[in-house]
Length: 607
Image (cartoon, rainbow, N blue to C red; front, side, top):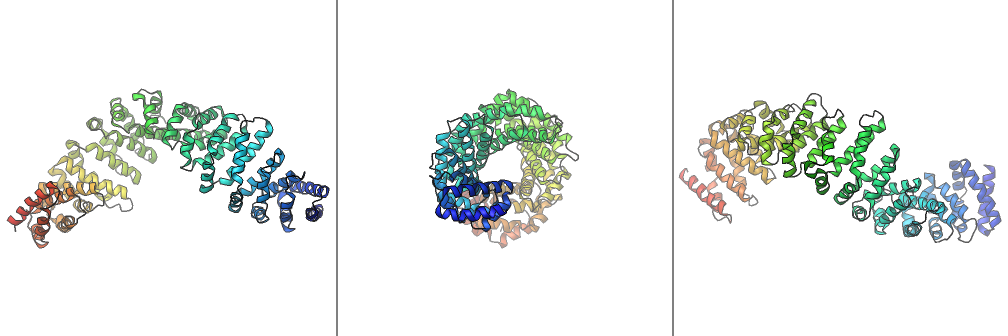
């Protein structure tokens, strides 16, 4: 270290008179010390204030310049030195060196700038202010066709520098995107696909840029899909495949790119990975299987890519995915069920799938997961069944296949995601199916659980779906027995509360169900109607100018329906409903104004 102190002192003096011979010897000594113990040497350089002397040594004419830039690159490997490099004024002279024709100067300058920018806000900001990025992008553009070793080495350093410059910084990434860096990097991937280090650097850069939404459009206008699929096919090592996966996942969130990836043959690659890793027990096999099957499901989220792979239900990909459902591998079962849920996004596909027996496969899968089952698999299989139950023609077929019975096995579940999907599936199944609605609506265990979930304040989705299913059981069955079951289990107050929901569709469903309760068994419901302040709630709905026409209409129907009850009739009189209703006779909606006239007559006749 004594030699180093001496060299540093000499360098400070030499930088003042720029004597090249003296400088060269000192610089070599510094590089040797840095190679020997980088941290210790860097601390010494900082202590002795040498950094501030280096800008004067960074002249394009000097033969020492590449070595001085190399010293800065080595020093900046230490986090504690990066801000010091900026404070010493090293960035502007380094940026000026980017105009040099000398490849060694460019290489060391690129390294120095890249290292200063690594994880350093100050470094990035200084490079940005000095206009470094456009110069580097221009170099990459002009060098990209060259496949000689020196050019590829320089390209690797420059791409790495841009990556460090923009990593996790949205505004700098947007700046690079506006400079057209994406098409340039995609070309690099095509021309230099045999250069491992450069390819990896491009992939990491893509991974960073792909996180930004504005990048997707630029990526979609290149042939990135073909290049990535081609690169993926070449990889044999797990780590290398993972690198490609990390770029594919954010890109595949874009529907245009999804389709490009499908057309480029990514699905075949993914199926191959699944086949190779499904029985593997190594950690990397499990990881690859998960990544490949997750990506497969993601590709199916795009309407065009999904339809292309469905191929009218005859597609080989669709058939392969079906074979995942009976598998013994939880990850594949999950991906298979999610894929079916994604294929089931239009009526044609749903009808075809129900007709070809997919429901049975899903029910068998659910049966395997009833006791201590995998929650994600339960959730995915229920999602698929819910989607399949949307077309009217499928409902009775699915009910006959025993879907409701299997779904009810999950009633004891304490997992909100499973509860939510279970409720949605049952609600879809009973829509327009009176017999099924009556059967489920008189199932005491189910209705008790629904009433319990109507109070799940921590889980708004479960609470909303429980209310909607409670209402649906009454609306679709129109059955006195169902109404009695709901009253007995304490469901009325929840339907009254649901009528004040911020969602109009839920308000309406609640009012129609309450109207049916009043029409079918007013005597049994009377106590609950009084206890839940039904009449004052209806008064509010009718008085509120923001209430939709159908809300006003159904509220008046309900008022008429409860007039047969003495205590409710008294409440109606006390609240002077007649004033509110008579105003509605002038309502612009004809159905509302007509119902207002009928309601007014009823109120007048019974006052």
